[in-house]
Length: 311
Figure 1: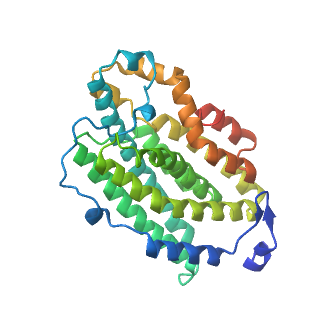
Figure 2: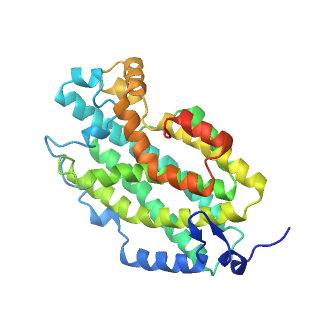
Figure 3: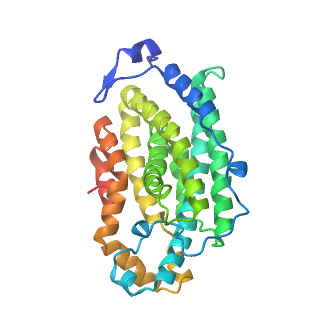
């Protein structure tokens, strides 16, 4: 099989323009990491008390917002649902980041350990370790339980990450990062939200911006240089990952825990035009990018539509 060198790649393009040099991208990201990295253990006031009258998540981003059930709920019950959904999303984030760390380690396994590309991947893994611990502390601080994804999806993820192609790994990375990032960009400046939650989302947004850049640049490279079979498998895996992600986005146990009928709540979320708009708006920047570089072709596109993340 012909090896594609960095010199070859510099001469290649995709729909977004020329591909960038991998080492130059990594050098810029390493510089940004040195300037803008945080230690959540010391950056955030974990001894602070929960603030009365403040949300744990913006109400417009709560799954039941503007449904008939939401309109029947008291303000106290709405805020309690937001607290549990924040814990559910943090639990989902930890699950995704643990998967991401495994995929990143596999990506760099055969690469030069002295390259900036590998050094940045290790830097990102360190970031993700801190993020996972930060999310776990936030769940504990807020007093809600953690919400593991259902066992069948937990085990399905074992399969997806085992058979994932390299471009599939970076596509899944972006799926796990960009929708939550969009929501967190709305959360950290929102003064209605708990100060500690805003601090957590601010740290995550700043550091995830680098992770998104790294994944986007590498995915573009992979979709240009990977063999046809690998690109086809990537589209399929990515579409299935989108379906799983959308199902697991909010654990339905949250409805039980705030005294709602789970089946009624899930049905109203599925029927909610507002919720569909929130999820598709949150995914739009990502789906536009995937469309541009050829990830949303064929069966993969149909799976994305079935996930509800693509109109």
